[in-house]
Length: 266
Image (tube, rainbow, N blue to C red):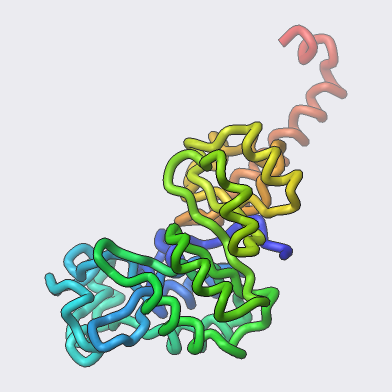
């Protein structure tokens, strides 16, 4: 699977309230081609785009998703906490998010978010039918920290592109995990990623996706090691950094031409 170098985290978390329709449109407006979103189920089984087990951090409500119907969840404002201009934003269903992604021509990395005490099988069985036929295969990647969710997803859909998420170090059994579910990518916390382990993953033909990177300069050496894609709260930071580096290199070459001895001594 060919992935873009830059994927916007939770829609576009730096520019709009995370995991909302507004965030999806903000990413598209900024020229970003792929977004990452989280999906989990409400008490009535409706798949919605949300990260936390509760509403408190990103809304004006304090209820747990496992206790809410869609009608109840829709009562909460999920935009004002980020900025007053997003007042009135409501929690998005998976169907609504897919419609927005498709209408803007975006790719989607959808994470099956299995919160504590939630059923990974039930989540997967609710989500996959909604995904069917909405996005082209090359624009959809489903990932999860839950091996159970991914294994069930593979049993339900033999063609779906799947990615394994690891929280800290990528374990020694990564290859067994990947083969068991037919993964196309390994998603790693870059601060715990071992270069040799990453090389093994690449040699096995899998994509390496790193999260969540908001410091392009600190991450720069990992591109040279073969990372395929990064998930960032603000992917435009990478473009800005690369453009600045290009200007810097151009200025350096110009200086070398004018003052070669001085530059070499420096």
